[in-house]
Length: 126
Image 1 (cartoon, rainbow, N blue to C red):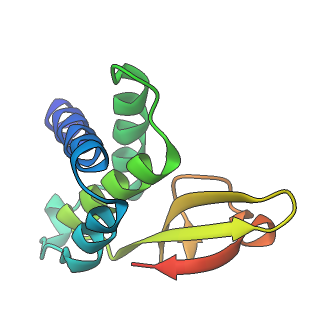
Image 2 (cartoon, rainbow, N blue to C red):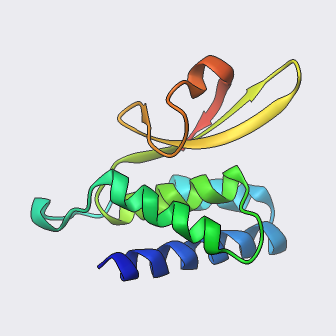
């Protein structure tokens, strides 16, 4: 099961990477916003930590550096595939200007530091 999860993680990274290269960033937002949470029975619902670790490993194995938007979009989609109501969150800080993306489940950051709300002002949730 963990190998399947790693393969799915890598496939989502490739898909998002291609969207970044071939389409506008808006297409990633639309993809994540329109994806639905899969209905899973509780006994075949993988835990959030396992899913996020698989995505982290896929990011390490990926052929080029994975930026936060690509990683967060792929993580949100993978979590939804396994029945979790995840949100990709995009935030920014003004001085110095920086933007960042992360994933939350029920208001808890799952793929980054838990204090992201203290650093970044939330611009979008999808």
